[in-house]
Structures are given as C-alpha cells and as structure tokens.
Amino acid sequence: MGAETTATSFAASIEAIRSKLPESLHHPQVGIICGSGLSGLVDVIKDVQKIHYSEIPDFSTSTVPGHKSELAFGFLGTVPVVAMLGRFHPYEGHGLSSVVYPVRVMARLGVKNMIITNAAGSLNPQIPVGTIVVIQDHLALPNLTGMNPLLGPQVSKDLPRFLPLSDAYSTTLRRLAFLAAHRLQLDDSALAEGVYAWVSGPTYETPAEGRFLRKAGADVVGMSTVPEVLAAREEGLNVMVLSLVTNFVVIPDSYPSIREEVKAELAGLKILRAEPEVVSHEEVLLIGKEKAKVMRELVQAVVTSIE
Ligand SMILES: O=P(O)(O)O[C@@H]1C[C@H](O)[C@@H](CO)O1
Image (cartoon, rainbow, N blue to C red):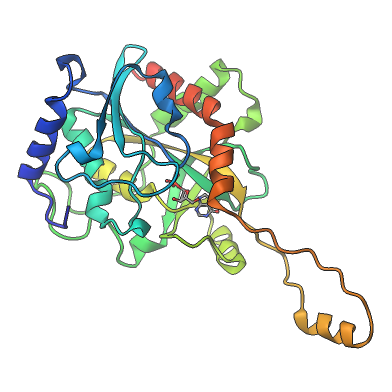
C-alpha cells in the first residue's frame, strides 16, 4: 500500500473481509489493536472468525515476534469487535500509509471506538514495570519533523485537513478504563495515567535520549501507536490507548567516568563497576505474557461498558 490509498482499495479490502464473515460480524463497533505479546485477547472473543492479512488486498504482514498477521472478528459480551492481533511498525519497512491502512478499513467497517494497546518502556520512576498506563497525551518527535501519516493527499476530502490533537485521547473511554479497573478490583497502582513518546525504533533509547524524553514530559516510550491514533482521529473515531510497561528505560543520574577509573587502576586500585542494564524484546514479550490476563480483562470490561 503506497501513499495513494484510494476509495477503490478500501472497497476491495472491505469486500474481501465481509465475504469471509457471517453477516452478524459485518459491522464491528469497537476496533482493538494488540501490542507486542498482547494478542491473547483473542481468547475472550466469542464466535471468533480470523482472517489472515494476506487474504486482504492492500494489507501488509507483520514481521515482529509477538505480532500475528490476523484480524479477529467476534463479540466481547454482545458488542461486535474487530481486533488486529498484530500491527505494522515503520521500522519494519512499512510506509506510514500501510501502517494506518487497517485503522481506516476498520473505520469503514463501522468501528466507532478504537482501543489501542502497546508495550512501552517507563521513563517515570513512579510507573513501575507491569503497570498499565492509560495514555492522556503524546509527544511525537517524528510527527513534528516530517514523519506524519497524515502528510500528503487526503484519503477523502470529507476528512479534516488540519486535525486538532488537543482532544486526541477520549476522556469518556479513559474514565471507563478506571471504572473497569475498580469493578475488576485491580490494585490502585495497577493503572496509571501518562504521556506516550513515539520514537521510530528499532533501536531502544540511549540514556541521553531517555533523559531528554523524560525532561520533555513523557512518561513512557514506544515504537508504535501514534500513527494509528492520528488516522483514527482523522477518521472521527474515539480513541483510548493502554500502554503496558515492560521495562525501565535506563536513565542514570551520571555516567561512570572511565577516565577516573583508568587513573585509579593505574594507581593500583581495584575498580568494581556494575554493568549497565540492557533491554531486550524477549523481556518485553515476557512481561506482556505475564500481564496478558489483566490487559485482556480490562479491555473486555471497557468494551462491554461502552454505550
Ligand atoms: O507494537 P508495540 O508498540 O507493542 O511493540 C513494542 C515496540 C517495539 O515494536 C517492540 C520493542 O520491544 O515492542
């Protein structure tokens, strides 16, 4: 899918999808995007029908471990839903219009509310690993510097050219998340609020980059989600984002001075230095697996409480 997404491509994708589904699933109301390791949500979808992305014209396929290339249609309670069991990231080589194409298709299938999940690193010492962060705002350096999925010709003249983002994250849906956590009797610390920083990846942050993002006001950082939020808002959908904190971004107060270390060694002193922590995608997936149940229950509880 190139930059020139057209009405014809949407029609072909929608026809291919609907031709594989019973009529009861033709008009999902809620769209869900599952982040790294979070596709276990599919286990609670009733009457589930899966469609591989390769069966849908103009869909890409995901290449990242922890992401499947399937759409799952079915019901959460009585609400018809569609879930992406894996997403596309620009770092995989997907163009931004491909990354957001499924969001636009979901909107054209009838989706009104979009719940987007991701795995993210914490920049905030008050937000430990395992916390689910209800995102209240974002900081997207790529958007500010020319990597914005809404750049270029509009997919429809009916959509706004200049999209405001001051209300990007639905207060109604965010309230539902906290009410759902209360109903599920989750510990008060299980759910936090914060700002998501979008970076392109695939490299994790250097300590200086982590410090910069923290000072700029971000609480968590990740490599996805914001392009999807922008497209969903442009399409007029209500959006909620849940970030699962899978790791801490290492932001030391100071760096060990190798210069001083060498001097001390030359003076005959023995130096003990802890190796810096490093994050890995395996760790990200592990925490995703550990927290899959609570994420699943929360999403399900929010969806079934949307009026
Ligand atoms: O798709 P999400 O944002 O959940 O995946 C995160 C960001 C990178 O794709 C990957 C890094 O471990 O996990």
